[in-house]
Length: 226
Image 1 (cartoon, rainbow, N blue to C red):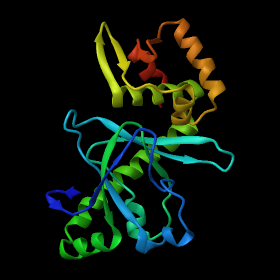
Image 2: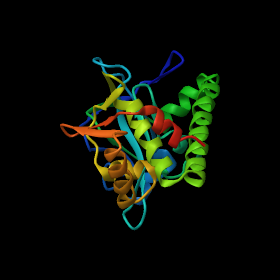
Image 3: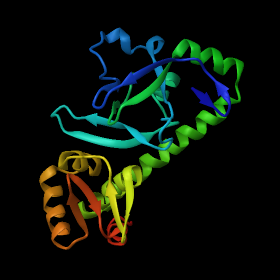
Image 4: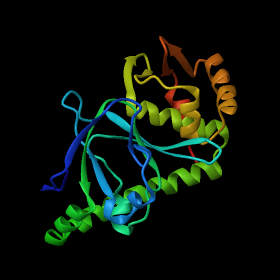
């Protein structure tokens, strides 16, 4: 992995679609979650499309309800919190497209930071951005209606996977289920389904060949604003 030109050697691993890249990747004994076993992963750039989003960060409640916290692409770093505090990972990371990640163990990470202390500033910026995203998500959950949260989830998917098809249509070139979008919005699937049927009837949204399409981005932006 590399932060502002400082490289850290890590073991590269490939993950197919749907495979866990962190926390739930493999059954582990409790001691495997200790600080000494912590690792930070860096999503390597795809040679075909550098900005392709390929990872999802999510949490699952004891009842099995899934909440997608973020969709990440090339150049992002995951697992960094455990590198600092030694606590178990707070969320899981899974590949939504075939991905290549570079894993760095805590011991190696500590050695590099000791030799290059200026990297702390760059990592602090990364953590600060994450906190701002969390603030934004909490505000959306607290202040937006179900329609507003649905709109923000769809816009996030359009930003991550959208392809301009002309005439204002944006095709989300990643097949997602209603449960996936509901998990991003933090709502139950039944509520999402009611909103989607209304928007499909009003041509704000459509579905073509299994792909969702944004037909009126301005309406979604208005719904998702707070």
